[in-house]
Amino acid sequence: MSIAVIAQLIYDEKEAIAQKTDAVLSESLGTRNTRHFLEAHKLLAEYISRGLELEDEVEAKQLIKEWAEKTSWNAINEKRPYNQSFQAFVIFKNQVLDIVELHTETENWSNKELISIIRKIDFLLDHASYHYVHSLIVNFESRIDEFEQMMKKDKKLIADLSVPIIPSIVPNTILVPIVGMLTNERFDITRDKLLHNITTQDAESIVCDFTGAILPDNGHFQMDDLAHQIEQLTKSVSLMGVEIIYVGFSSRLVQEIVRAGVKIEAETFSTFRTGLRYLANKKNWALTDEIYSRSNAQGEEEKNLVSSVPHEN
Image 1 (cartoon, rainbow, N blue to C red):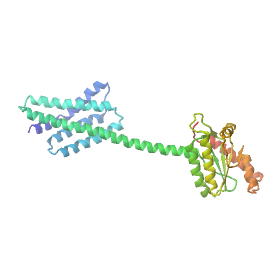
Image 2: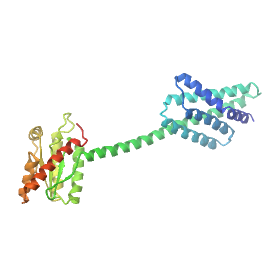
Image 3: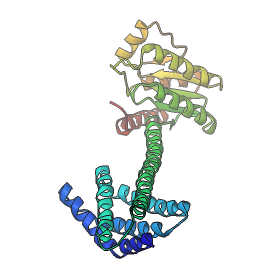
Image 4: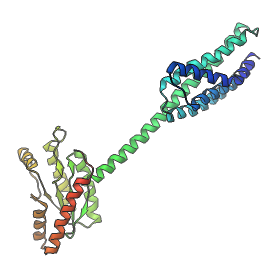
């Protein structure tokens, strides 16, 4: 009967327990807690009361687990510091034990009964703190997974934008401006996008423009990497029966390629204009003044695109 008495007393005093816990914690931290924090302790007192009366430990654990999951979610949403929650458990427990101590003065309980009450209170609060921390970890891991997925999507979007594929005014030709810092990842994306667009755009020729490319200075992308990537890109499109030419190599890039002994198995040109003239002559296209001027305009549009696309500097 003693446990039932204490359970009822804790239930009746749940508001006072919550307010005292909040007051002591606020004084200790020098801050005022939120309404949800106060309600959480009020609800915990109610669940402790109900748990004390339950003879089935499994049912009592489940009751406390429900409280922990709900409270931890609110704590994350409120961005509550961990130390507040952990300090609150200690303060809350002291408030409950104060009630037990106060009631022992008016009840003639044996030591066995008193120990049984304290043990059950400890049991419930231990499980409350355990499930609370466990729920925090689960919720944080879930949010980290969501954040990582968002990061991957954003990274892919930026990478896609930094490798634009532009249909050319020249028949069956697509333009690929290589924008920003040269990285293996950027070349991988370029190759994948090119292979896809060759089919969808019925391409016969590709102009790969390095005018907007930047060579890194930190050594993470060596010239051997560049040689391998250009080789893979050239071979990949060649296997699909498409010719690729490279234009816009900077003087520094040319010097590095020569210094590294890299041999590019494709035609190269200093500018988009000369590359276009080469394709026109090879394919016997009538490069009329209209097409030429429109192609030059497209080259200007490409330059504008290079300056507007997000990339690493």
